[in-house]
Image (cartoon, one colour):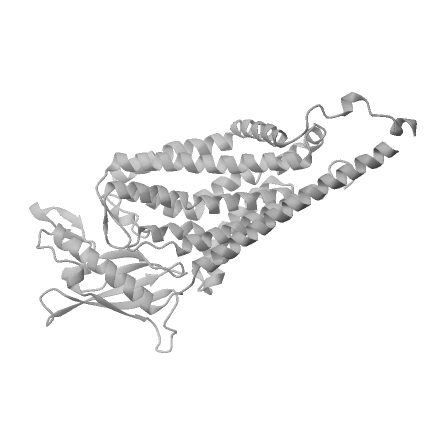
Length: 290
Length: 168
């Protein structure tokens, strides 16, 4: 009783009020951890070199990837190349790329049994969660930005002739650069939503194979479901649809309806997944009998 | 004991503040969602929207094709192109949605009395993007390449038309 009634020793008090700085510390630490992973390095290397390898590969042969938008123009204009990469990337590479990191960022601590170690530090669960979440989002954004830059450079290297837009109009170089950048920017919301989804599966499953595997399988499921003639709202609910919204930018006149709906879809997926992940993570018993 | 109770009250207050902040955040997100939903609108995947998009794209690409061949360049508007599309298969098939459509594009190259018809098999995807494959006449859209000035082999823009229309 005397112990509880008296003031606690000063070392138990918090010297500085805990605020956002805690999140920042976790975020920085997590980013440092990510940079040490071979997966992350391999992905960064792919983002750096991939577009140039594709350009070199296209130059070696005369065939074109004709079954995708802009595919037939890859030898005519360099601006078609980033769009072909985005066409394929939006279906597979981008969702899988972010899931490989985000699907592991929480469950890795389960795998190595390190939750007890980090939760006994002076950082709360909320700060840990926010920091890790922010690190995964940062990685996804940084990877996308890197890919946009190398893509555009590779395209410019291949040729700056006007490109035929999806409305049949000739798009001059200056406008084409803007459209390429806008198109790539339009896939950031679905990439971030996929990141939140992978974090959710990572937190819930406590297993990296499932954490990464479920988002990857989901991209596959989305691809199959997209082929079915669903009602319009059913199509809009899928997280794969916003990846295709950029097509409207290249039309004449351009339209942004799909992009607009995509923002709603992405916000919903992002909100639900991150809230779900936090609710599970907050209540979780760590260490001892669960 | 009093210190402990005080601590509890402080903690409750802090949690209350967190709740208010979370509630404000949720309210903000819902407002944003509602605003964007009302701003987006919806039209669907129908024959008129496909026809409008295909005829406009065709006209633009026809102009490009003539320019590449070194012919006199008509204006896209002067072609007065009109597309007429029907869903392939049986007769009772619903005339909307994704799948293979058969389209005829009527356009004018030699005055109003002489309409030309170009045919396309159009594979429409669920997101409103389509790939129209030329199905005659051969001189217009049959060959994947055309011959430009100095016998240069160029891609025939009318052989395969990629386009999209707004389904939202």
